[in-house]
Each structure stands twice: as C-alpha cells, then as structure tokens.
Length: 352
Image 1 (tube, helix red, strand yellow):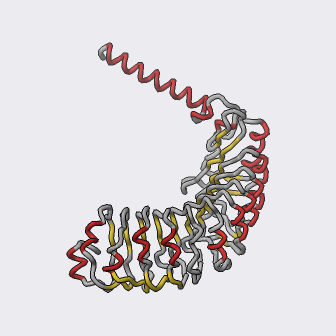
Image 2 (image 1 turned 60 degrees about the vertical axis):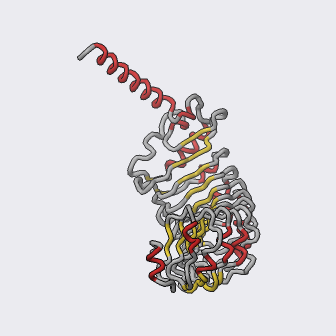
Image 3 (image 1 turned 45 degrees about the horizontal axis):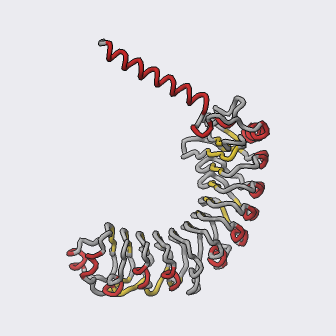
C-alpha cells in the first residue's frame, strides 16, 4: 500500500475513534457537558421499575448521568430532565405500568410513549400533574378506558396525540382548559357521548392549528356558524364520522385552512362555493359522502389558487366542467369518480 493511501486510512480510523469517544461520553450533542439532577435520576430509575422492556430499549439507563440515557434530554444549564422521548414504532415491546414517580420530574416538557405496548391499562390520572408539559404523545400505545379529564390541567400543552381505538371521552369540557394547544389528534377515540359541544369548545382554543378527529363516532348536524371562531386552523380532518349534516357555511371563512378531509362522513347538500376562494387551501377531500352536490361549472370557476389535490369522488356533482379548470396550475390530483358528469369530458381532461 502506498504511503499516501496508508496515511489517509489511518486518519479515517483516527477520526472514527474520536467520534465514537465523543458520542460515548457526551450522548446527544445537546447533552455534552451537563449532568442530570440526582433527584431526576432517582425518579427515572423508579419509573423504569414499573416498565416491561423485553427488547432492551432502556439498556442505557444506568450510570450517574441520566442525560446520556436513551430517550432522555436535559436542560443545558440546570441538568433537569425536560424530555422523555421513547416512541416504539412497533419495534419495541416497551409496556408495563406507569409509576407516579414520573411526576417528580418537575421540568418535564416532552413525553412520547407512542406505539408502545401498555396493553389494557388506563392513561394515569397523575399525568394531569405534569404542569410544565408541552408535548404529550400516547398515540397507539395500548392505553384503554376513559381519557382522564384532569389532562385539562396541562395549560402549557401545545401538542396532544391520543389517537387510539381503545379510548373513550365521556365529557369534553376539560379540553377548553388546554389554552395553549396547537395540535390535537383524537382519531379513533370514541367521542359518541360528547354531542355537538366539542365544536364550541374547540373554537375557544385560540392557537389551534391542526385538528384530527377521524373515525370518532361524531354525529351532527352542525350549526351553520360552527367554524366562525377558528381563526388559526390549517389542518382539519373530520373523515369517517356520521354527521348527517350540511357542510357549515362558516367553513369558508377559515382563511387559514390548508388541508381539509371531510370524506365519508355523511355530509349532504350543496358544496359551499366559497371553498374555492380559500387562499391557502392545498388539499381537499369530500369523497364518499354520496349526497354532496354542486354545479361543476360554478364550482370550478372559482379561484382554487393553490389547490394541489381535490377529491370529490362518489357524490352527486353534475353539469359541465368549465375550461378554466385547466388553469388550476398547482393541481396534480383531481378525482371526480362516480358523479353525474359527462364521461367524455372527464376523459378528455384526463380526470378519473
């Protein structure tokens, strides 16, 4: 081997060894110098005793500096634990019991146990005592039973994901106290007991930008003014419910909307023409409502300035398509399948 090649190889080995040394001694980059609080370490070790960890996800939970443990992040100045990030992604069997020692982590802001295997246990009531929590993700984690109303105590919470088919909400009033909430996902959660009060409660959350309530057993009808106070909402998913309602006219006043899915939810009547004038709307699905109707010539003469995907399939649209439909310059996906539009015209425009 030539000297230059040998030198290059030695440098690569040296760099690799240095990188491994740095990683093994500092953990993640934002943990380089800080050491965790002794009280937080003890709380985490007690929390661990309740968990079942057949795949060894928590193998690194030993030693003095818990800031270097898997899934743990600490405040750079104080050493307080601020994050437990242990999503399982179906790759780990992490489960067992949640011990109340987690409430001793007074600075905890982020808790992610999504896709883990807490089969058959309820969401602990004491989660409502995690006063500084800003992010809570328990989606698909196997919890069941009633969602504890004292989650409403988490006034700093910005992100809440409880997506599950095993959870139920019997009273929705506690959500109104989540005054900082920006993201809410309750898809699959049984909300059939809450009536129409949920829409009024959510309209009082001034920062809410993303709402997912697909397949929740919600029913209608909506009041026409239902969406008047949703001034920040960008993503709305109400698909796979049973509203048996007209689409509220007030939806066209939510100028912040980017992505709307109200498919397969038993909406009927006229599609509000004002949807075409929403300045930020990129994705709209109203498919499989069966009884939504619109005059195509009127509907597609609207602006549709930024629309990229538009699915109106399996409804009762009728009439001719205007030539202006070809001016929807960002449109990449248009589905008008199973409507009362002349077949030759849809084929001519390449529409399925």
